[in-house]
Image 1 (cartoon, helix red, strand yellow):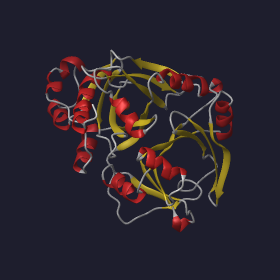
Image 2 (spheres, helix red, strand yellow):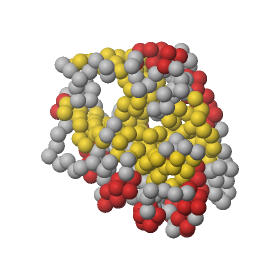
Image 3 (cartoon, rainbow, N blue to C red):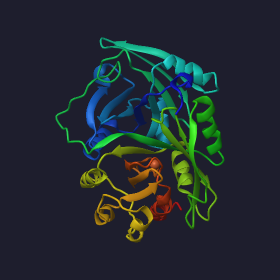
Length: 367
Ligand code: FE2
């Protein structure tokens, strides 16, 4: 634990994750219907924005913003042309957006936007931003003086269609894929520029199958609320999934967002019934599972039917499952995770998981 008084970049949590998408109206419908996100706020032509439209959805503490361009010659349109739908902003909730900006830019961060105050009848919000890997940006958001529904410029969005939630609670971690030999560059960025600590690392011996490999370092902020694993591809007989991502995204970017639930069996049943597609785990994975992880509360058969993975560390165990990519390009996907004491990331599942991903790569002809 870092003492708050010595942490030059205190962060209270993830504020929101903003995607640039080709059609925000349809993407919003997908996140409502499939994942159970609830409508929160809107910005677009009707609110006076002629450049872009954004839908804001929330479930538990997870806030998603889906933004689409209304004009062909914008930075947003270019982003979509190059990368397809993807994460542009990982916004961090901070007590001081000015200090966050100053402390990080003086340590070498590249500026996205200097601190700016936005206001309306509900108060004011201060936002600044710095670039991280690829075209991805960290926004620093200080909303301590704001009472509105989301941010100035947005109005409440309360459509008639409102399917229920699926039990998703908060962002557990967000993983970045970076290029060859860049993992250490970005681990150093998070440690030197943002004051994060490395809490775990995996080399290609931990994360490799017969065919492909990757390496990863997990960076965490002082209070542990923000965890960013950074992956880079490693040499294997065939193409690593990280390389496949980079080929389709065109640069480094967010690979997956892990969302926590208190009841993974219930959540995954619900998500499956709403059309969310998950990676397939072969039955053989479950044959020796209990020998490996010991006693667990859940029925083995239930986990096998739902393709949920289990891993144990010194502090407890965790259950996790991974969706297929949620775009046609094999880029961003989601992890659903339930922690029962464990603070790690499912190292014992890497092999089974990556063999499953390779099966999908094989089908796509990108292995
Ligand atoms: Fe993960």
